[in-house]
Length: 357
Image (tube, rainbow, N blue to C red):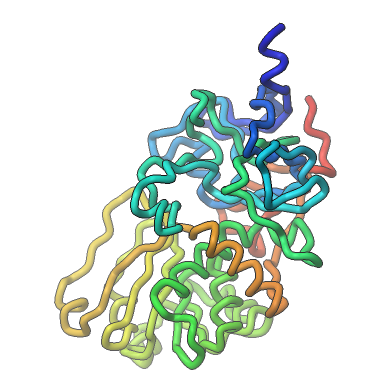
């Protein structure tokens, strides 16, 4: 009976194998430790990475796996040493639930670059148990990896900000690209891309959306407020935009040539990669050398940046464009996401769903 004192049972929706199909799954989570927060999950966004993970696209998936790393929940219990949160608070949990706390990145408050970081799901926690994500009734998370959701922001609106919003905010902040008047490009208009347009516009940038077809033109210009729309296969227009961008956020999660986009950058322009791609990309070096251009990457953001980004979105009145679904629709939602058939982020209403089989 001893184990009952240290664990509780929850129901989540898990992938059991690389088919990636999710179904109900019961498992145990640890009891609330001194620095832990137990939260009841309210909403959880569906990210493209969830598809990679449940289908073992990256070759490191462990099953059964409960995905979900854009989690908003209500605090139902706090450990004895929790100082920042109280019962009833609405909080967010992103991609990371642990780090070593002693390496340079951890000491510099950029724990997302810790080599020993612990993912919200498909990882092993310090107690040796698998971590499971937000498509579940509850989660237990160390207070360091929890953020308060600003008052007035609804759970379903806040959820995608914890990965998609943060992923764009962090590099703009880190590379000194927050000042107004810059000219930026967003390549790919999915979950991360649509937040990129909104955040860059709120920072006072001139924003060009670059896409593979004309399909999203009206959406980009009229609904998201982009200034220009470029179809990447239109050589004449691409030529017109050569040397015009200070930065380009590349959110495309599949193989694509980089040369056409490098030519859009000004001197010292930055191509910032954000799509998880498991095949090598290529480019010709003179395109980079002759404009002192950088190809760089950025990975989600820190807890500090998460708080900043949520405050920024609240202050500017920014929201994500979402489609709310129930848990029993999740497999269809994943299929649709794979075909880019969503505007722009699915969010699961976890609290309003029947999770049990």
